[in-house]
Length: 250
Ligand SMILES: Nc1ncnc2c1ncn2[C@@H]1O[C@H](COP(=O)(O)OP(=O)(O)OP(=O)(O)O)[C@@H](O)[C@H]1O
Ligand SMILES: [Mg+2]
Image (tube, rainbow, N blue to C red):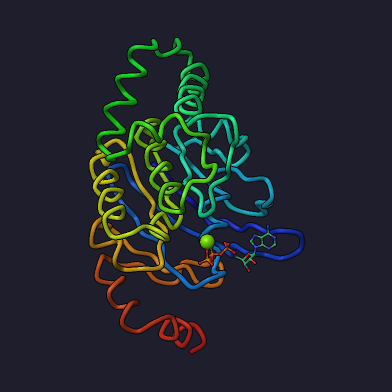
């Protein structure tokens, strides 16, 4: 699904990603952990095609196609979805209208006709029920005045609607109360299939009790310095990042 090879990325003359290698297969969930400023959000932004960052070396393959030169919307049309650590507000555009536009743009880019209105309503109903989203919520302006948890839940709703091949969730857990965390995690688990892959960025092991990863990676100073199974998250929680730091400096 996703294959990242020796990826380097900079902003100005500051190198942030310093040789990332990552293989994510269809059907897998990968968790990326690591201290503040390690480059986790940068990695997700670079995969999604944010041009603030310059890729100076390496490649990003999505289903064997190099997507590193494509515009963000082209990547989205190919099935890359990124949920942001800090979602933007779009006043005057309702949640429903935003979704309708996003879905139809993707269909258009892939040579499909627009989704008929009744089908759209049906899908919106199904997915909002799956994520226990109140109907009233759907007519509100996108992210405007949404609480932190509502923004996060809405992003998972977008993911549910768009059915991406590769979803990257950047700190989807931050700001969610216990119930919302469970709902969001259940939603993600239900959306998981053998045809898609999910990358979850988180600081807390807790989320990984709900969304069980196949692999856990530690990003430290622009590199993946450790990979393992679910147990690596527990080890990190217990030992903290000093452990990684000491290993790196040794
Ligand atoms: N637009 C930018 N301009 C300047 N520096 C940036 C920019 N984006 C990222 N950086 C720097 O790159 C480094 C990595 O940032 P990034 O946001 O990727 O970290 P992170 O691992 O997501 O951290 P956190 O856990 O705090 O979310 C930081 O030192 C950050 O200051
Ligand atoms: Mg971040």
